[in-house]
Image 1 (cartoon, one colour):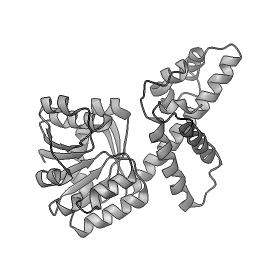
Image 2 (cartoon, one colour; image 1 turned 180 degrees about the vertical axis):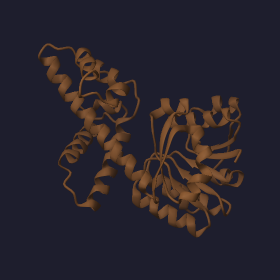
Image 3 (cartoon, helix red, strand yellow; image 1 turned 135 degrees about the vertical axis):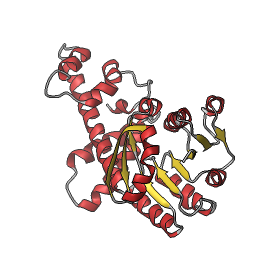
Image 4 (cartoon, one colour; image 1 turned 90 degrees about the horizontal axis):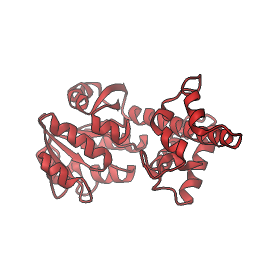
Length: 283
């Protein structure tokens, strides 16, 4: 398992590639728009011309892609990875996508004798850089045990959560919760500020009280300053994940009053042109 492929080398993929290279892996990467190509090549990574070239080099291929459509085309398209990856190979999708796409890709991969695991991650670019991601894995349990040593290089909390699609289910639920907390923090900080209490003081007190939360630990400085150019997670990506959550929730037929409101707020922020801002720019 000392050779790994990576499709998609943005802020997350860059950190994953660095962790793998540091662990002694040969890493073949396809991303013709990556701004990280030069520094990664200096570390020993090999960028190739397309996904087929990655699949021909590596039995284990990681995906770090921005949308379900791109995942589907990359895996099962006309010249997708399934056309080139060897039987017995592994596709690990570390993207955040929808359950339907995951199930379709897993089925298509299985028909070719290829293992497909959904492995969405939490921890952002900082976690990817440090190799401290939380990784939620869905799919065949035997396949999970086969790739866990590889995932251990990328994260410090690796959790097998169930059958194919379970990883994506957990990730989408988590991101909806993060978005909801972010929205409430934005609103309550505005109220406190209007009544003469500084945002920073409120944040300090919240973190010493029953309202303590991880969102404030990670995104607090943006919320306190009201400046959203230091992007920890793009608002456009959060909005995409919330839409995927709302689609997922329709299958359960459970009311989503709060989640629906949060999703609408992010839609509005996106329409206001805030997509390239940090996800905390929702208010």
